Image 1: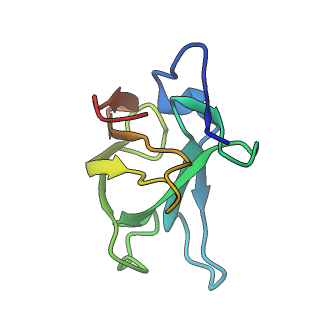
Image 2 (image 1 turned 45 degrees about the horizontal axis):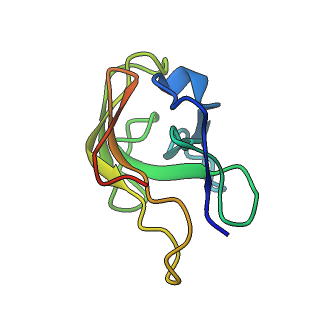
Length: 114
């Protein structure tokens, strides 16, 4: 089963049900999670969500793992992440294969997404 494309891709991070993810150890905003801007569901029929570790996390401490450089504020309309985010999908060729940027709270999808 392949992911189901949205009728219209999302343009804004704020429209992708974003959430700052805290760590179990009490760290604040160590990851950012959001719905895929081009897929409604993944190959299993579940909502297609993307999660990326942040550098720096919202709490300003060291990242918990190598992460995407975060700039902008805590509101989702100003967040910029670098470098691009590239989902590779599943090993059998199914799954979300979104590749793109989050810049100033907006999605920029690259041409190799599918």
